[in-house]
Length: 288
Ligand code: NAD
Image (tube, rainbow, N blue to C red; front, top):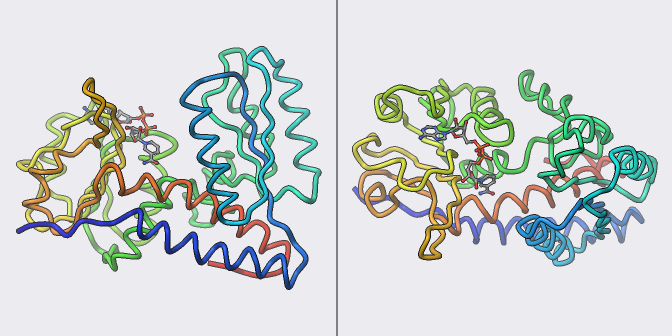
């Protein structure tokens, strides 16, 4: 068996075109100009690249973005005051605080200060808790991107065995909850899991988000499984790879997402989606 390769870039492009047209409808028919505020504290090089990419994607979709770049020694109170102002600003439909934050700032205080109905990253405790009951205001972008990819590829979730490798708050745990909500039988593995392969072998759908290159080899994958690789790892030779031995596993899986070009392009796309949805709600449009 040789797996079909999921073209995350193409799916993301298609969705972004749809969102761009919905943005035009909001502007033209409802007089609403969707906007996101992005807060970056400090000069973390990777964060600067992520923020630049997010802002560029907003521009391409017609979503207004405003960057608040604050110095690394910004007091927490000042950051919270900025969030309060953005919460109160009716022209701001989404607020994103780029993580990580400098050590002296309490991340949970910051995330919980963002108004739930503007929390387009889906990291507020209310949105995290909402995953348990299946009614988040905004789902977190990376697992939501995986869900959209699975939907796009018509992968059946109900009744399937899903194994999620990685149990972080931003990827693994919400991913597991989202798929459980769709009636999959879900198992979550992490770095303390003994004999990872005995679990992954049971997976009809295997989602890997560990940050360990080459973690998943063909012997750990069931023939015909759907394999989604969320990992992003930079090798010493400069290559970007996921957590899955792509060349080996693609010979055994039925469907596989590559790195790069799989889940990656979907994450920012879901940020655009959440911001658009936030503005559509103001217009009284109940979107997807
Ligand atoms: P994290 O470091 O917060 O969590 C990693 C998880 O993997 C932990 O639960 C840990 O227990 C588990 N783990 C680590 N080593 C393991 C092992 N040997 N066996 C089993 N489990 C193991 O990371 P994260 O933020 O969840 O990100 C995970 C990966 O996904 C990273 O490579 C990250 O770069 C990538 N990522 C990609 C996107 C995207 O848009 N594609 C977004 C977020 C994260």
